[in-house]
Length: 388
Ligand SMILES: NC(=O)c1ccc[n+]([C@@H]2O[C@H](COP(=O)([O-])OP(=O)(O)OC[C@H]3O[C@@H](n4cnc5c(N)ncnc54)[C@H](OP(=O)(O)O)[C@@H]3O)[C@@H](O)[C@H]2O)c1
Image (cartoon, rainbow, N blue to C red; front, side):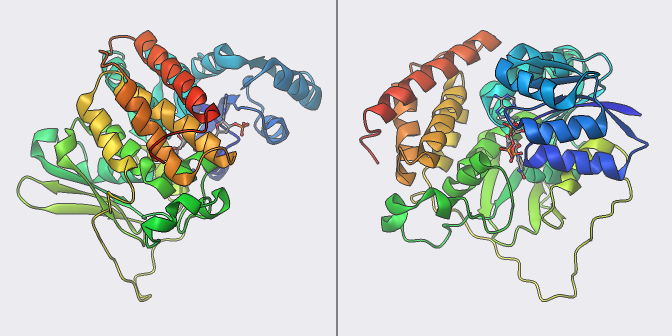
C-alpha cells in the first residue's frame, strides 16, 4: 500500500484524488491531509479516511476542526503544519494540489525528504522550477505531473530524452473568451470568466484559463519537467480539449495523447505510474461525430501568454514575480477591485519594475514573491495599473 499525503485535499484536484483512493482502496492509505479553510469538507474527509496528521491554514481553523472531528487525529496549522503533512515518514507519495505559492515550501521540503511528488500545483514549478528539479534529481524523487497537458507530454515522451524532441505542443481550450471581441474585454465580469467551456476547476485556475495565463504557467512548467527550452514549446488553441498535448520528435513524427476531460485520468496515471490500472472512467466515443480544430492563440487579446514566455526567457526571480503578481491580480479581479484587462496590465507593470535577480536559494524566491505582492497591493489600492 502506498502512503499518501494530499496537500489541498478539499479542492477540485484534491477531491478527485480521493475518488481515485476510493476506486483503489487496497492500494492507498491516506496518511496526511492538508487544506486551507474548508473545515467542513475536511472534517468529512478525516472521518472517512482516518489520516494520522491533518493540517489547516490557521490556528482558528484548527480549533474548529478539532471540535468537529474529536480526538484521534493530530491537527496542526500554518506553513509548518503543511510541511509536517508533506514530510510525514509514512507518506511515500505527496500529492501537491494546493493552489498557488502556499504549496512551494511544503512541496520542496517533501522533495528534500525524498518523497515522490504527484504535482498539480504548477505555481511551485513556475516560481522555483530549477531548484525543484535539482532537488528531485539529488534525492532521486519522482516529479510526476497531474496537469492533463503535462501528463499527455509525459506519456508521449515515454522516457525519451530532450534531444529527440523538436517541439512540445501544449493545447489550450481557449477559455470562455476565445471568440470575444477585444474591445469588450475590459467589461468581463468574474461570473463570465468563471464559466469555463470544458473543465470544471477551482476559481484561480479558471480565471487563469480565461486570460491564458494558465497556458503561460504551463509553458514554464513544461520547461522544467521535460528540460526543453522555451523556443521549442508551443501553444495551440484546441477548443474540444480532446487532444491533451503533443510531442513532435526530431524525425517529424508527432505523438498526441487523447482522452475525455476528466481529471481522474491524469491523477490516476501519476499515482499508478509506471503501471496502468483498470479505471471505471468511460473512454472516448469515436463513433460520435467529432471535429478536432487547432489554431494559433491570439497573443494580442491574451497578453499573459507572452508575459510568461518573457519571464521564462529572462529567468532568475522573474517567473516568481510573474506568479505572485498574477495571484494577487486574480484575487483582486474576483473581488471586483481590478478589471479583467487589469490582470495582464498589473503583471506587466510589476515585471517591468523588478530588478533582474539571480535565483540561488528558496529564500531568493520567497523574497521575490514578497516584493511582487507588496507592489501589487500598492497598485491595486491606488486603483491599479495605468495600462488597463
Ligand atoms: N482543477 C483542475 O482541474 C486542475 C487541473 C490542472 C492543474 N490544477 C492545479 O492544481 C492546483 C489546485 O487547483 P484546484 O482547481 O484544485 O484549486 P481549488 O479547487 O481552489 O483547491 C485549492 C486547494 O488549496 C487549498 N488551499 C488554499 N489556500 C491554502 C492555504 N493557505 N493553506 C493550505 N491549503 C490551502 C484549498 O483549501 P480550502 O478549500 O480548504 O481553503 C484547496 O484544498 C492549482 O495549482 C491548479 O493550477 C488544477
